[in-house]
Length: 323
Image (cartoon, rainbow, N blue to C red; front, side):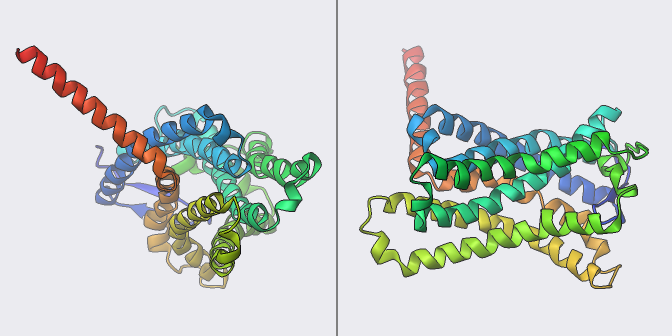
């Protein structure tokens, strides 16, 4: 690993020094997280798509979309981060990779937050207002159209801002995201506020608030829901959402520092926001597949059973070779 230090340029325009030791620790932690999460993502994507009943369930559509978006973030954004932490610069150092990195780091990352916040809202509709989904037109209006919007809104917006917005591109491969995105240098200040507030802060709070509200509603109305045929589905949906909302609490330190800085203390937390809280924001991407896996005990049992069968088969082959 290279020993050269580098700078981190976060979305709030704060340049902070990143020491070699800090980079090394973050590299190995991120490497373990990425290499552990990637096969879990692939397994879950296959599991959800291969089983027709699971694939067609309305409450799984938002999970499937999230798995695809988060897998792109993991395989592109976090892979670029790993290379940057190891080398001190982006490799290969090309403008095309810089722009793709920026698109995934902003367009897809904010898209992930939109997906999770809508999942928290939609769970209330699926459990307590299912009459809104009992016809094809209602499903189109209250399920499919919102799902399409939250999936593609930020990727489309940031595709324009990053690739087509008229701004000077100065590629610095020794700074995260090549010192971009470059539209920051040309858009009005109120748009930067809009981005931080509506693309980041509000979705996180929607996820946390609506998840807790769903959990409370389920507890209060458990006796009524327990007699319905969909109780197991309701419980699974609630468990999934609770797991997801818990892992997204890792975003709160960055949000708190950002809000305090907005209030007038411009230098508050800059020594930790860039070097540490910036990377803490990626913990939910790494933990998300494990949160979903934890809400599917049957899949976990299948994995354990297959692993045991393979171990037995290998041991039998070894015994046969000995004789």
